[in-house]
Image 1 (cartoon, one colour):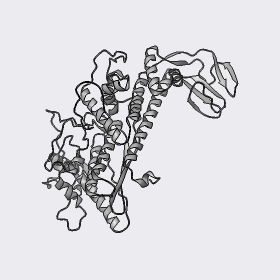
Image 2 (cartoon, helix red, strand yellow):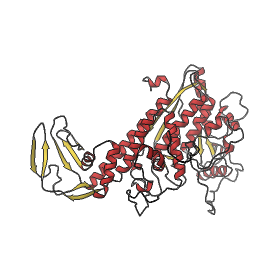
Image 3 (cartoon, one colour):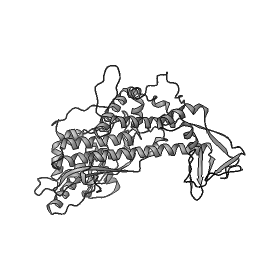
Image 4 (cartoon, helix red, strand yellow):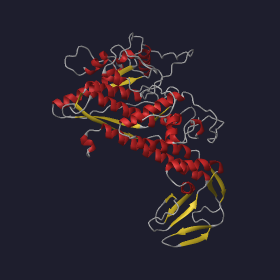
Length: 495
């Protein structure tokens, strides 16, 4: 995996969204700390000179904020918010409320919260005779879940445990899920056929792959926001041993591929692909800088750049870093079972989608000509289109976009003329509905009518086609990950 070509080889980096390298903390080098180093999100330092909002008034009888807001003598909005804010000012970002834990994203690392001692205290939360209660911490939730699993196994009745993580964009859900998964892995015994290091590495790889293809920057404080829902499962047996893992995803925000609000970004992998010049040259992909693609260009960009202009240096900021991440991504794909040949097809498909996004349509008046009705070896003509499109404008691929259409068709493995026809026409089948029109295709010998689309309708077909392809690609990636993670019973037909 990775890029090949001439020049001085760069040291390989791990696939992570953290710009700032971390040094080992305290007890460095343990499996726990290696797991906890999994791809932490980019952190934006707090802006200097901006005065923080004054905290709301609190109950004056509370001197030290409790770690559980259910212990407040006066339960009110002001008391709850004030307690959470006071704890946050002391770098205590977690506050409990009975079994719930409220986490406030500090947008920076707080190493003192994630030491071995804290992990051990949270793991002992349900142990009889524990010397002290577990602190308000995300690991307390995982500690309680694992304790219930062990109790069920001891009674011969294993009960599933569910941890729900919810919050606004940028609240830290992805990081919290990673921390919980790491803590469960550190507490749990593994089935004899599993290696802790191998399972941890595979979990790391699956997380980073999903982030590369499904995460994006939504705000300045949320540069690695998950744009899909995820249901991660650690599978335990009757001995409370982990036998494997799998993930289910839902609600992928495919609209982000073709549109996003100002100041937001597309999926990470597309920018990495545009920066991978060496890999593109090796695979003979016509990759351009990100600003050359309509769907990657910043939403506020008022001066679009023609994709044909390849001689202008349009290097994106941090392009070298993006190329390093792409090389690490190729290695990670290979480690979860995606061979180099499939990777080449993957990058070809994504590049084809980017060029498809550069295809534009113009409108010409629809002529009062005949529309063809075709059946089993018969054809008929009528005076004008039979779908009510008489007098409407019809779509055609813009002359300036013909080169992008040719490249997109070549990369997607279809004929350019067939692609243009499918984007600009619809087909109505007798007794059925409308669908994309494909030339020289008969609908099981039935009657059907093809008619042109307007420019706006053609653009909608273009966007829907790209989103459907990307959604199928993401579903394939999840299947690849589960094949690397799942225990044998699941692969053989279990859940």
